[in-house]
Image (cartoon, rainbow, N blue to C red; front, side, top):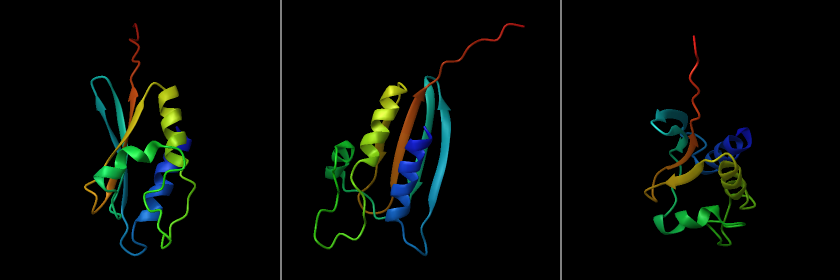
Length: 114
């Protein structure tokens, strides 16, 4: 799980403004699981590119003017880890400002007998 958070936070730091970048890490409990998220106020991801993010070596910006490095493997690895944990990962962005990456893990609550 730490690797997943490292990947998500690393991605967020690449795409926020150096002077005005904000990254929020938080979570909440749902009936059937725990949802954690990493939210930033970066450049956003166009809606038509969001499903591609979890494909091996995919880069949103493939132009020659691309300034941000990366291999296109971080989210693929994160998705694999989440699936092994029985969870899911997804992205939300309006394509203009900011991106939120969500993780959902199932809860296995055990009752404690007193």
